[in-house]
Image 1 (cartoon, rainbow, N blue to C red):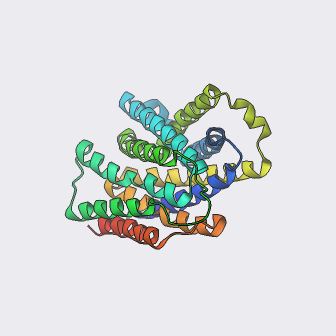
Image 2: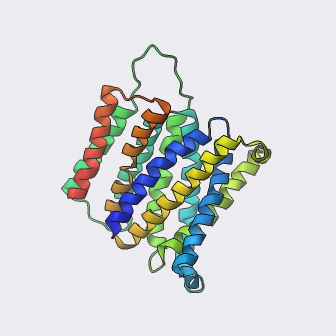
Length: 287
């Protein structure tokens, strides 16, 4: 069961990047993150009541709550960094760096959760690392540069926080329905996102959101909600060190649609890097 949910998570996560990019051409990325989290919140709590896990609210332990809150904070930080990186950088470079969180998660899963690291996982780590490096290399071109500065820094921070999210989330949903865990985490993310909006004094931007971009932001929220629910359902019954790599295959979906929608082309070196990332991920699954 966990394998099917992990694949579903990868697909919806890949679509999320494309929809979000369409919604932040003119809209501030922090504002977009705050708005779309409303959608995810509604979606996640709807699922809680559909499966009837709201009854577990009174039985949650302090440990569950603590790690779910910490996981939510890590998720919020990862989202804010990721969507800012998407706003100023190209999808086919931002996404590979964000997916490097796979390597970090495997290391943390070994250190903190005691999950074994086989030779296959080590080979996968090398493949993902080399592939990421190749994909973010500058392409030799005479075309004017379209990227903004600082995208790599924000994408890397996104990867770090995403890896923490996986580990903290794994601990937080022990003995708890995954849907309820997702819903609780979403509340934390929502509060964090709006705090950032008010701190940066962007709250008035919400009134003047472009309707077309708002639609894409909302759709990205639905895609994120579906990805989350699949991801944490998989985490509840499967090993984090395998689920995370499958989820990161969403990079293929993102790269394909980035070419179709934004005409972002991969150089031969970047294409080889993508193959390295996919191969490294598949090697981990075989092992």
